[in-house]
Amino acid sequence: MQRILLIATFLFMSSHLWAQLSQTPESPSSLTLHLKISSMHTSQAPEVWNSYFILTYQERYIPRFVAVAFEHENYQILHKFLRNEQNIFVYYDNIPDLPELKYRIIVDGVWQADPNNPHTMTDPKGVSLSILTLPQQRNILAKGPIYRGGGIVDFYLSTRPEANVFLVGDFTRWDPFLLPMKEVEDGLYHVRLFLGKGQHHYYFLVNGSRMTDPANFLQKEFLGETVSAWQTPDNY
Image 1 (spheres, rainbow, N blue to C red):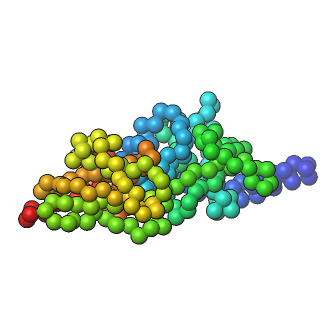
Image 2 (cartoon, rainbow, N blue to C red):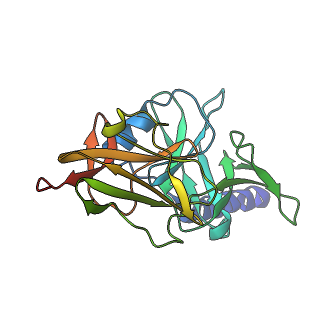
Image 3 (cartoon, rainbow, N blue to C red):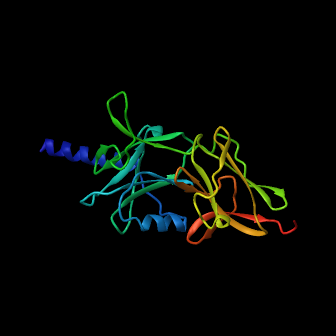
């Protein structure tokens, strides 16, 4: 009887501690992010998408609990995954000001590396960690579009060095590879082009991942996606 009471007490204390360490996820506030998450039919490699990073998990059976813990939080907080209608577990968050994320996935109490992430390392204790490299647009002074007059606009993007960066917009007919950007400084990319009068929409493509302009607060929903916007003056 005493043993049963000890086990019951342990389970109660464990569940109480688990609740303290778990954070309930919030539904996406962005319509495009909500549509992206709800339309996922299979798990995939970690993704940097606009200003978010996205992790996914899928199992043959439906787990009761899926979460992620990060090294920069000393693995003290368990962030729960959302589950969409296709039973894909999804976690998203804003990109933190870190060069990379080191993390582990927790599935029904079992800690493991992310099975969808091929980039792993082993810490000094022999534990396998997953690694996600993040874009570093915060380390360099960001510059938004600069109007030079006569319809000439300079576009800049601060991100990781030696990246493949393209400017994509209605002015390229949304061709993702028509306008490559040149790395003019370490991690600072630039392209100059002529834009006609009126409003234009665009985004950046960095190593295959799309993102809005972090130095341009003007954003709009366009063709079902969040894009940055630029207004060329009419008086030129």
